[in-house]
Length: 182
Image (cartoon, rainbow, N blue to C red; front, side, top):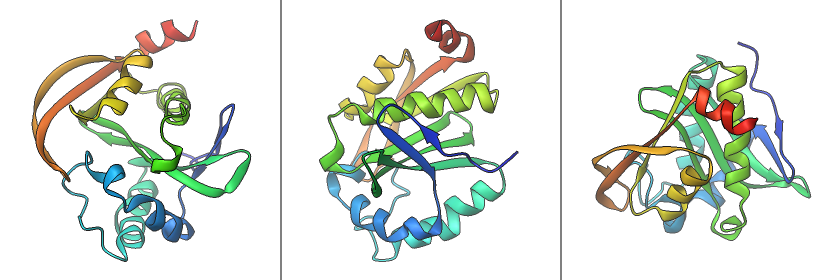
């Protein structure tokens, strides 16, 4: 597989993650509003070298192995400013994850970013199915799944940074996604 490409949407540049993004990620990510509904594997309080350690030890090696694809989210009008991250993962029942800085939330940016990486998942990577787990109280994430044609296929419980919550599993097949595109 070739290197992760830069993706463009109407308003966004999704640039492949690089080690140089660590400082900007550290500044934007380490906020309770961003992390509370993320998997409990995310350390909290977030360590001072949390972003650097994550990029160096987890994300970049997974990219190199061809198991994950990560992009930073930036406005085309301000490409120097990192607003968040969106990722695709080749893991059972966990194919897409994201976070967005609080100041950038509520503007439809993540829906736009999700459309671009979902297209990459189905068209470029040729995957037959996308499944996305989320904390049930994360209403913003739920709305993105609903708007993008996913359906709820299961619930259980899991540990998140903010505690133990009900967890939902959302799904869309390649065929369903293709029907939406036509």
